[in-house]
Amino acid sequence: MHDFLLNKSFNPYKYSMFMSNNSNSQPGTLYNALTAGSKIIGTIIADSDIRIDGTVEGELNCSGKVVIGEQGKLKGTISCQNAEILGNLDGKIDVKNTLALRASGVIKGEVNTQILIVEPNAQFNGSCSMKKTEEQPTNKK
Image (cartoon, rainbow, N blue to C red; front, side, top):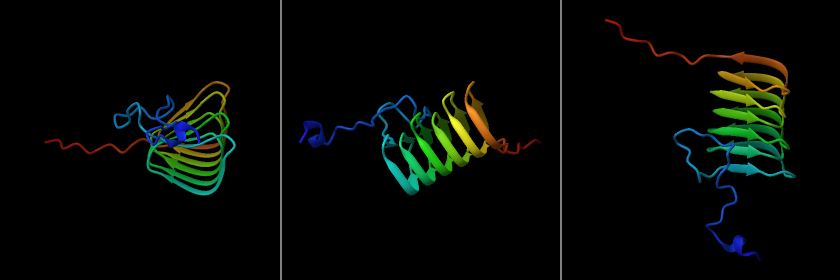
């Protein structure tokens, strides 16, 4: 057996430039990953960021950021805080904050987000609903 498999402190998923950069995430923060060549059919619930480089058919609920890598494919629904699409999404995505569709990304379906970033050469075929956050009422006297 390889030494790195025996070393419990070894973690190949320790840091990624694609994961969220909010104040709660720091370099070295762990995130979930589905590697290329892997396939999941069903529901994924992630309490932290997740990167998909394989194939998912079903539902993905994430409390953090979702990244679909260039080789990644998701057919189904996503609910998350932020998302970055470099691969393929066929279905519905609900993003509470920012959705970034990169040049290699393809979305077919329904998008609900507050902020949408679309790079040149990205493909988006479907509908988009953009909502502002609700402003807190001010107490004027």
